[in-house]
Picture (tube, rainbow, N blue to C red):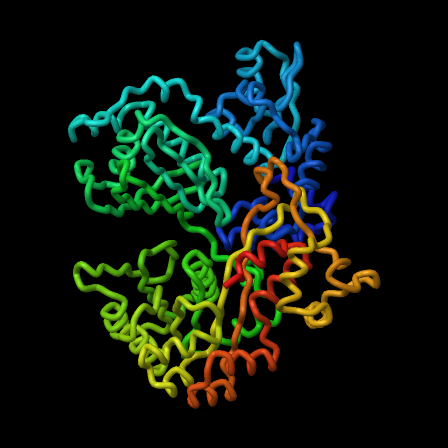
Amino acid sequence: MLPKQLLIELLQENFKITPDEVSSLGLKAEKQKKDFEQYLLEEKTVDEGELYTKAAIKMDVPFVSLKNQEIKKEILNLVPAPMAQTHSVVAFDKNNTEISLAMLDPQDIQTIEFLRRKTGLTPKVFLTTPSDIKEAIRRYHTDIENDLSIKNLTNNENTETGDLKKVAEELPIINIVNNILEHAVYENASDIHIEPLEKQVEVRYRIDGILHSVMTLPQTVKNGLVARVKVLSNLKIDEHMKPQDGRFKIQVADEKLSFRVSIIPVYDGEKIVMRLLHEGQKALSLEQLGFLPEQKKLVEEAIAKPHGMVLVTGPTGSGKTTTLYSLLGILNQPDVNISTIEDPIEYHVKGINQSQINPQVGFTFASGLRAFLRQDPDIIMVGEIRDAETAEIAIHAAMTGHLVLSTLHTNDAPTTLPRLLDMGIPPFLVAFTTNIIVAQRLVRKNCEYCKKEFKLEKSAINELQKSFGTEKIKKLFLSQNIKLNQDEKDLDTITFYHGEGCHRCNNSGYKGRIGIYEVMDIDKEITKKINERATADVLKEYARSIGMITMLEDGLVKAKQGITTIEEVLRATRD
């Protein structure tokens, strides 16, 4: 981070921000317990690249952007990974006499002198941005397979429990596990899969919803890896035939992370799956989640009601829990009592009472919900409505003055209502307690660094033609204030976008994910139709007649805006 005085001077001289505005922004940053510069960049008050370019001029050092630079492994390794991380310094180029260093603090003489002595080269110092340094550090964690200490490990196939403890403490095993965890954090993976095969161990990461094979390790490390993860998670090392669940925490750079661990016996040993959970992660706003303006307005109105149910639906891994946490983030005020019952607790949120179910002692969603009603809550979140008993208690809570947020597994918004009726809930209860239903899927976002315009291929056009004609699509875009050019007359000529692939997105063309939504507001007419036990098709037809757009249509709008691709939308919405 830049020195505060320098930052204030830059804001006033180059960004025309007055001293009063600087003070006001400083107070807001303090209120949110954030560093001043971090706050400015998060709120997009200033552009990071522009800020650091101006800072470089002021500090009289050259500026370098590492965004599209390929850095050779042997040059990167001239600065050891721990030093790169703690001192925010990266080597990106060299010749016979000089080494080029990108730094966040070009006045860190101690680090510069150390690298001069270590490399025997004259350091040429450049200023770069924090995000460029973070991206460059990520590249250190990509070569675990070739670590010699791993290759030298002996096979520990039939070791005793006591020996397994010893194996788990071996330095190479500790390094492998640490590297796998850190690499996953830098790759923004959501899950780590460690899978034993007959002759090797496969490590895969789920990145933006897609599994990628990242490394293959020799079979000799198999038992050591499992033992190490069990030690970290406080699980039984000598239990190999039963599934085990645990949890542990680590810190990578400045970030605290929790890993939720699941270990199950498989044919060739034990398979480990670890879910990454960012501790204290800030809830996303509705815009960041991807709600279009009209949908956002409906959701805000629904959660502003003092009671009733807000239901979020979709398959496993469609981001339902993240949406609920974001709604709780909006509702989390000092004057309300919020209680949640979850399986498991994914994020710990300050100011909210969170409970995790434990069926082994009879603490289920239904029994927990009953207990909650004696805890004087204003808002209740139920992780999932899985059965008629939970549905019934949730609906009664919504009727007796509580706002209830929950999730269900259904394919779209209209089918949620008949699903509740199938559980045996009387239609009038469903009709009068449900405020809104949000159905969702996640799609991968185009990589901002390699996004290009392109025209649709024949297969995508044919698939879209089944659901939409060109006129229908034009009407949809018009309703969402998207203007088409005169030459965009049909699906062949409408411009969409896709990522070409670059090192920032591992040549996938995608980086990050966003939701596509179907928001069904329960008005008086829908209430009447539910009481008449209307089918999902009838409910859908009416909701569409009053302006509801489907997930496919929402995805089309986002594809036209350049946020995602048509292929992603079709993949996510295909039934």
